Image 1 (cartoon, rainbow, N blue to C red):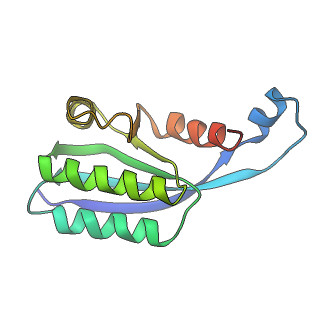
Image 2: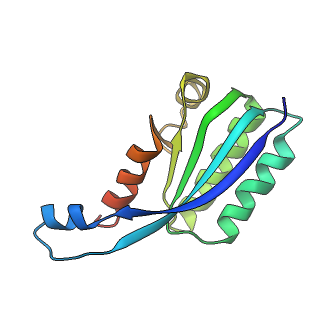
Length: 135
């Protein structure tokens, strides 16, 4: 199966977070949602890398990698994901990964959960982006 990628941008609602913190702030943090479907393996590794490189080149305020449509995540895909999360962190760009057990299990098994923060939905990941504005 081929790897497909789609990018969109969303705004995290930080006004609710600000109200909870006692601040009168109404703003939005823009984050990139990069969605992948298919298999991430040796055949699609170059495409996966190129898509992630394009995301970082845009210097977004945050990135949500939506891997909920990924059917297979290989060791090479994990290595690329790990490098992406490390590179983003070095630029101050928070990264959240969304995916089912096909994705989360290898991430957890390889100890990448500390680098690649995993969420069940894009909405939960976006809420985490809003939380990071105040930390």
